[in-house]
Picture (cartoon, rainbow, N blue to C red):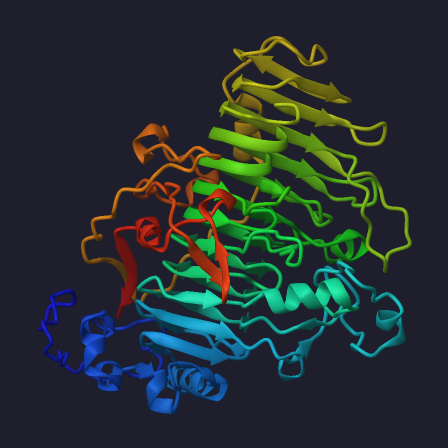
Length: 588
């Protein structure tokens, strides 16, 4: 058999043709020979490299990698062909492909080869409109309904509460879907949507990737650039893994404001793992949500059992949002969240838990540990109940939300920070209960109102309303994880088993000059890994993240607009360092 990663040396590689499997056994699987066909070297032999077995090259369906020919139909036909076979892989060779929104199918691997870029079609009249999500707004209203039209306004921010433009990659009610490859790129060309939003009333802008009511979803080893709205959105999904993903958003400049360009947003989802990612976003790097006000409360599906680890956030220049946040739309509830071993290089706030009196719902069982924070513009660690924004479709008066059992352990705030290092803001309606801070050190003041909890071994002795001693290390929050009854994780049926396939050795990266304004990330060895704590023990430990150093090379994140290193950019040659040394391939 031909080696998957051997050098091409100018000779086309013809992989062995795998035997054809039954349509049912083809679910979410490719053979070892098909993997060889998808390697960068085998791609040199043209479309035939993906021919055979259950793999489908978009070139065979008429796609043209010239960046200007609309290829939506060719891509959709390749996805539908794989679906008709019971599952398979869709191979996208190197090149630029202009595509409109695609509907994904179950048992699918979408493989973006090295050098492959999907450019989103931003012509407004060619992008379909889909209904609002029922936990955000009235899903039965059409775009031209008077109730929708009378609320539309310039720079109106309705998220998914109104009819919205369809995401570039959209999966609804699907299972076993993987988006991966050789670090290919999804480019939302979001500047067109941002400018429209600034100038005229607009329906909901399109996400780059969105899954609804889906399970067993993997997004791995891809780069996402300039979404029209959120980069990824997982609504009412379970068993989701986002790993080794780089998100790059254009900096804020006077004529371009990438508002609401969040990175990774689990929403009313459970059993979610986010790890080893680099997020340079125009809004929150990661935002955990569960519906908006009365719609979220009526839907009543919480986000739970979510692990975030080894994530680096460096928000794009001009952004004042949070590195990692819970809320503010959390009316269905959020519980059992672990955030660990992560690094916030630059953000408005490093960690922010934000609720408002109109939200209802709850936030409980949240643990943040082993966190390094550098530049922040509003504060380091924030838990607040004073977020005032409300859903325009909701008129009821809900019960006050509940915030309890939140712990911060081993946090270093290097600064500079323009706000307080710790800011706990409860209200007369919302008392922040059992907030614990242990070994929180660094620069900045502490502010605490309407909160209970404890503090121990910190660099400052502020917030006298907290007890001076914590009874046990992480005891209260860990007890919440241990004693709360949750549904057991679903066991996969017998069938394909995951194996690790090594990637080729990383290129030797040229030396770069450190950014004069922001400090570069320390090497991964400087980030302590103190054991893989995962709620309910669902997720295994994996390799440490690679550093994402700053550089002095310009990189273009939107056509014709250079991003300088002093606005938080990364040189292109460093993006390879953000990938893990393995790719997940499931073999029948």
